[in-house]
Image (cartoon, rainbow, N blue to C red; front, side):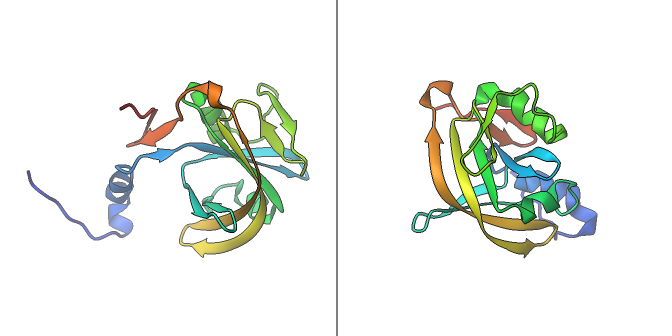
Amino acid sequence: MTQTSFTPGPDTLTEMRAALGCFATGVVVVTTETKRGPLAITANSFTSVSLTPPLVLWCPALQSKRHDPFVDATHFSIHVMAERDIDTALHFARNGEVFDTHDWVQSREGVPALAQALVRLDCTHHAAHPGGDHTILVGEVLRVSQRGDLGAGLVFHQGKYGRFTD
């Protein structure tokens, strides 16, 4: 087997994306409330940071039209998507302002809470840090809601959605 190497840079963005795509991630939909109404975005840049205090992070792209409303939000909810909810993840990847075909209510903080999430983490804005072409948003988890009856989590790997099997 041959190993190839490259130096990350402007001429190797495709190769860099492919290399990073070898790491499977979960898929989340992040929601918040804005002056225009509810807003959502699909992300795979989510991870836990700390248990004490309970901190998580995700990273919206600077070029996204949805970047600033999320960075400015005082509260947001992170929804861990089930495999069967791939259509929801794809919908909010394309359009973050259309909620009329999705079952949701407002959380105590006034943030859209999707009904079909495996896990929902209701967060308050803890910190925002520059991260290259993204912003690293850290949220403190105020409340966790879980539904174990929705099946396996949705996974993103090498540009495709699917599930983990053992």
